[in-house]
Length: 135
Image (cartoon, rainbow, N blue to C red):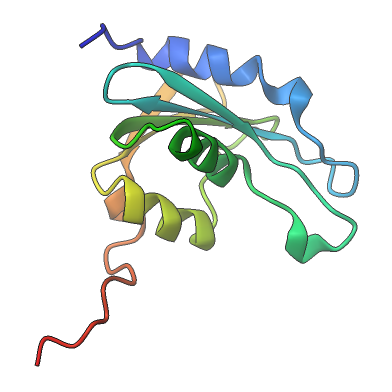
């Protein structure tokens, strides 16, 4: 397995993606960098639509791109915005990320630029899961 990047270097790489965000309505640009178990990284940015429900968050864009490229095991997701506070995944992103990466660690950027690490499972302790009958 390749060496993992430091949390700070993951944030730096995610920050470099912010200019690719497409946020003409909210002007709230978000970028994500998803790190797979083999240390490869998968970028994502938020992309907005005039029909707001059709917009896509950076986190899901990173995950869906990674899955479409054949990645299947993930360990960290760096998430940045231009906000002074750490940006957190929305509820939909939390659910989808947990389905594909239940042990994922979020690497967030504090106001001073330093990294903060948080387990995704702590943000969504009781996710929707398999509802097939066991009877």
